[in-house]
Image (cartoon, rainbow, N blue to C red; front, side):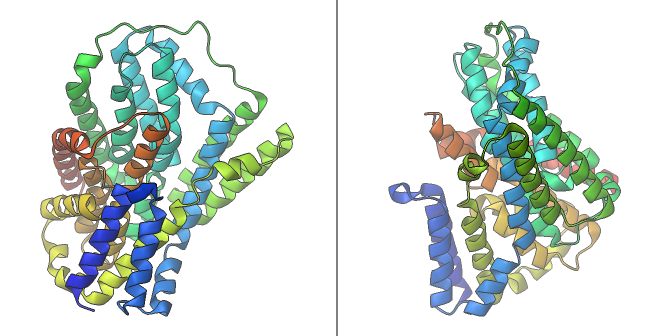
Length: 406
C-alpha cells in the first residue's frame, strides 16, 4: 500500500479520535484504523501483533498509574490536597492559581501527566466551586498545560518517554543533566504565559474553607503508598529498572494493601480505571507500524540530523497533528542512531509540543473527557488560541536550556 493511502487512513482515524462522532469512545476509531490497515495489507497480522506487543511497558505503566490515581480519588486524597490549597491561598485567586500550578507540577512529575489530567482535574473543579470562583476554567487549564509542560522533568512523568527511548531510558542522573534546566524553563514559561492570559480572572476574592476535608484511614494509607511508589520509581529511574513493570506492581500492590487494611473490595477502583486507553494506545502503535512499513521513516531519515531547534519544533508540530504517542514511537525509529542532542530535542518536542492543540497528547484528550464529566467544555479553537501563546515560548526556552546542558 502506498504511503499516501496509509497517511490518509491514519489521518481519518486520528480525526475521529478527536471528533468522537456519535459519541464513540476514542479507542474505537483507533482500532478501526488499525484493523483497516491490516485488512488492506498495509501491515501483516503478525506485524500488527508485534506492534501491539511493542507497547508492553507502556501498557503496564498506564495500568499501574491509573490504579494509583483511581485509588487516590476513591480515598479522597486529591480532594483533601485541594482543600488544603484553598485554605493556604487565604482567599487570593492568584495565590490559589499558583498553589494549584505547583501541585500539578508535583503530580505530573511523580505520577505522570495522565494522572494530572484525569484525577486532579475533578479535584480542582470541586475546589474552585467550593472557593466561589466565578470561572473555574483558569484553574482547570493548569491541569491541561502542566500535564505536558512538566512531563519531561523525570523519566516517569510521561508514557511517551518510555515510547521514545524504547526500553533504553537514560539513568536518572543523565536524565536530569539533559532535561533539568529545560524542564524548569518550560514550567516557568508556561506559568508566566498562562497567568498573562488568565490574569483578568485572578483578581477576585475567594471564599476560605472553614476546615479541610478530613483524610480517612484509607486515604492516609493511600497517601503513604503514593509517596512510597514515587520514591521507588525515582530509584528505578536512577538504576535503570523497567519502569512499566515496576509501576504496575506498585499500583496493584497499593490497591491490594489498602483494600486489606480498610476491608473494602478492590472492584470499585478497578471499574473506575479507563481501560479503553489500552486499546487506544495499541491501535496507535499499529498505525505507526504501518507508516513505518510504508516507508515514512525512510522519507524522514535526514530529519534526525537537522539540529536541536528544527527537530524539537518539527516533532512538536507533528505531535499536534498526529498525537504525541504515535509520533514518539515514530521518533524512536527515526532517532535510534541519532546524536544525543537530537534525541533529547525530539523528546522535548514530543512532550511539550502538544500544548498547542487538543489533538496533541493523550493527557489532553483525557483532560477534555474530565471537563465533559464536570459539565464544562473547551473548544478546539479556544485551546488553540491559548496554545499559540503558551507553547512556542516554552518550547523555545526548553530547547535553549537543552542546548546549554549539552
